[in-house]
Image (tube, rainbow, N blue to C red; front, side, top):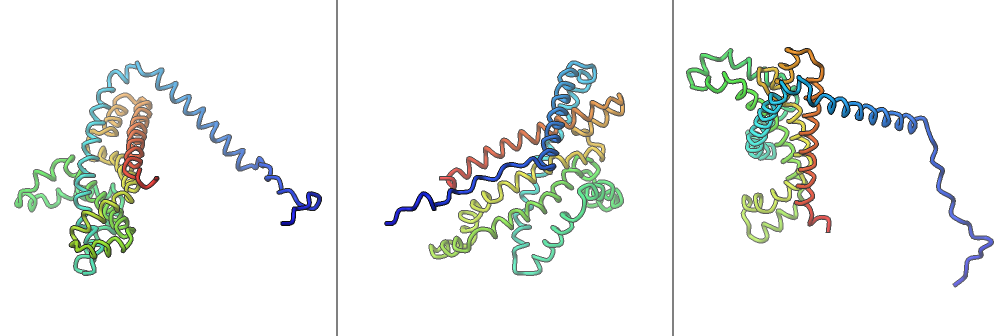
Length: 275
């Protein structure tokens, strides 16, 4: 073995010096501005915690929070139930099933949630005689039911695509291995494929829940007093801008709490993948 000559061997080049480019300087300036704005907002909220506005409308915000949770929870549960057959139809080789499912997903993912809510809430009144004859007017005359119905249809389209993509992400060897063991395809899907697909879809599902929470503010436009509905009512009576500040903080708290819970859930369910 020939030893390296210290005189001729070259030392590795030093790491490049970090340059303070204009982009880095701008990034630090923006971060400092965000910190200052956050500190000022926190000081403003703490100093107004005992204000007459909070004392008068604080419980209204709590009630609005409960309505928001009800709308989002019901919409997600109904949407999850609808997403399974829609995902099956989208993956079917039979066009009689795949084509309507594709049109359903295309429509609800391609149009705004606000327009869908208006179509159901205001459009139902156009068909009131027909809905009364079939005994469904009691459902569509309630703004809460219309909002839940519209949100459920919207989120079912997104959840169907999430589920379909997650199932397609599972290796075909899983199907082949289950078939070699003599398992029927329904058993293979629900016992082998679906649990793995749900782990793949955890993060997209969490994002969809967060989007639904923020999108639920649309319900206030159709006379539902959720968080945003109570905010609009409080502002219309007081013209106090802190009504919207408290609403923004409340939505932020909801989303951040859910994000942390979802992170813990994801870490718990996928802990065997990190070993």
